[in-house]
Image 1 (cartoon, rainbow, N blue to C red):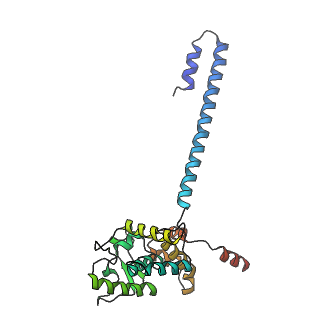
Image 2 (cartoon, rainbow, N blue to C red; image 1 turned 180 degrees about the horizontal axis):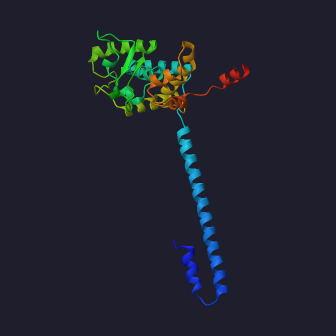
Image 3 (cartoon, one colour; image 1 turned 45 degrees about the vertical axis):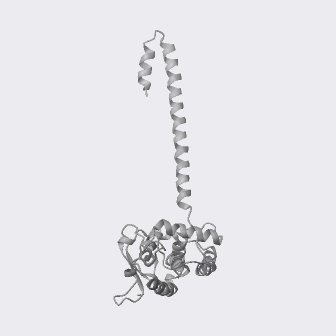
Length: 249
């Protein structure tokens, strides 16, 4: 970019000082105008870019209602691989596990030293996102289905992994994501994805944790978030609760 000073020097090489001064002023004004226009365009581009990012971050999978959870369980139970699929669904909605964690969950992480189903999931780092291994209590409904699932697996040939396919002793995170997408599409649950169960789990436990003397920090540890703010972003707002608490002030 040519500097205003070099332009001014070129003009002063001309013979008429008055013309030089006028021409320089006009050229300098055009440069300033162009710079302002470019700056405005950059600001508009940045704002639009930030809006796109904000929209992307703000677009979250919908949570499931208790009725939808019942409908989904009834739908899955009566179909091929029903018990296994119910376990996948419950690991998400009653355990808050990610698709990757569901696919990599092993029996050794849920069994006691005596080989019985325990009361917790000892999720190892190898099965999680990053190093978010953790100890997670097993929901009673999930435990019932895990027991049924293990009985079926023992009869058909037990794998190290809790979730396996008919062709393989394990499955992938993408396969889990695809399963949820197909189930929710068939059920007509618009806006739901493999993340809906996890969001539902975090939202419901966050609303009830104070009843048992806990806090959001406990939820954070259960779901493997490194930052409490991440956990807070998962929680679905409750306008009814907001209205009720305002009336208490």
